[in-house]
Image 1 (cartoon, rainbow, N blue to C red):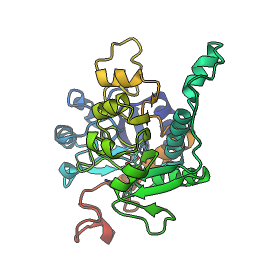
Image 2 (cartoon, protein in one colour):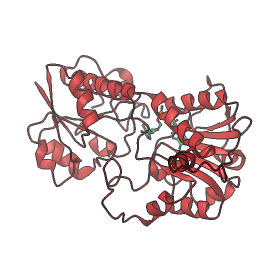
Image 3 (cartoon, helix red, strand yellow):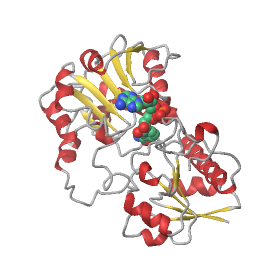
Length: 344
Ligand code: NAI
């Protein structure tokens, strides 16, 4: 029997993992995140399954290794919360690279459409029997320019949706996809020419706070920004200033730089300490959702199925998992995975 401790579990995670669990894997669900304080919980488990806000740093990695845990199974695509270089040679780390790009791309577009046509304001008004249209004027998307940053799986679906609306798409990616029917441009061109900008790239050390006061200055007045990728791609304080100065016309944020201790839980009876988030939440042209873009039935099923495949392929050695996350992968000449061998 393979024993896996699942952290930061919500009811929907438990339901999907239990419905796909094979006889050879036993999941134990913990509601708490995996932290240095509760690392003793991992004793006796073969692997841990964690989510986007479990910060897997050197302290946790040492604790996992000391307790005999062999692998970390991320039930998400992004892995910026794991110190993968510290993992190397100590513990294997797997992710679910694609569970539903449609879930995230469609949600990003839903944020864009809602803000663009003030649906969030109209919803509240008509529930209060206020049928006035004052202040609800939107813009046609047809013919407008949208800048898409990151043309991977989610970015590509998003581009297709934008094209369906008759938008001009400009794209930026450090590794342009030559098979994609899209016009690539520099980031600067994207900032200068876009009416809408949507972020679909991973968070790295290099692009942290790529949306900041300098890049905001380059943007068109009234630009609309959508972020469903990672919060720290945007400097929230600079975003707030951009909104206050009317340089930014609207912002749809499914992620926030300081979301770790706030998102995914009910804080309605708490006083929010984060003044920037409070101020953003009070803005009529800002929609903040709590990292919800992935949450569709199809995505949850795919996450559970792929995580179980990752667990089985690692522990039963059925085949080399392409889903292993390794900071050497593909970059080094001696990359073992490219030679169909385990990363270490
Ligand atoms: P992907 O790996 O298929 O594509 C990412 C693309 O970004 C690649 O083409 C890559 O070359 C490009 N890229 C790398 N660095 C870049 C940079 N500095 N600037 C612009 N592009 C860059 O990833 P996928 O599946 O499309 O996911 C994108 C991101 O979406 C993930 O990294 C994750 O942060 C976020 N995400 C958010 C979810 C949510 O629920 N809000 C759910 C799933 C993913």
